[in-house]
Image (cartoon, rainbow, N blue to C red; front, side, top):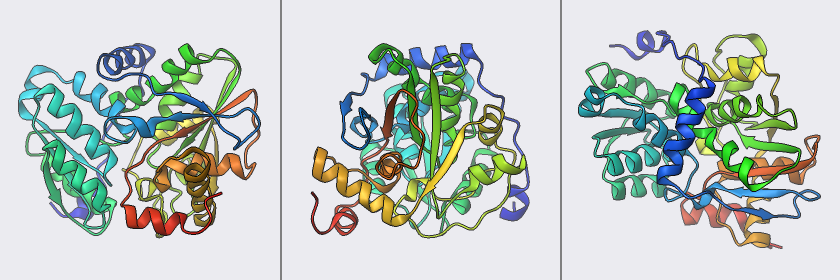
Length: 327
């Protein structure tokens, strides 16, 4: 099937229900310990939620566990296919390994070497295709059409529900009004947190994109998926357009979730801050929420919680990004 023709096909992905969120939280809890909250000087009284401490180095493992746990038996036997800039693939590979399910992960040729090496360690069938995430995603959809289940990094009911498990952990970790600041690439994490927050009158969610890639906010603004230019960015896990008809911008728009963007210089600044002040190796995608707090780009109501979502970055790239004084 031609990539252009396949890209025009819209999958119907239902919004997760409250029951989906609760089932996903239970599935995630059976595999993963809660990630810690630590104090930071990034904003007055702010906290960091260290998703970079997950066994795969990223929050994406939550959605992967939830999605595979929800598979019926025949789908488990057929296996799963995913497209990923790296972290979703790692989550799928980890969940598949723990569940005894065969997984194929399609990554673009430009995927981070650190993430590709980690994928190999988790034992997934690794396929490299295309020059960017968009091409990898189209190819993965084509592979899945041959019988396996396609698990999107963001446009999937159970993946979105799995990412919301962060919110249920926060329920147990802190009891006060919150502004939860989250990175946005395809919008699965922000959508999950938004649906969780809908049940809490004292919780606000703010999404943060890289200025170089703003597909979700563009779709939310106009009410349909649109193609946006995607530039080079340290936040490689947030870069790329989104699948036609994606549910994530619909969820964010319907709940008026605030969206802002940070520049490459601001991402570097946040990575330096996290290394110098907290001793954390954080990839660009994982640092954008902290970047927004450092630059006072959002209005914080109650206590701010910035999600530090990933650590999977090649050391030379990290050294270049944080080069110079780390204070």
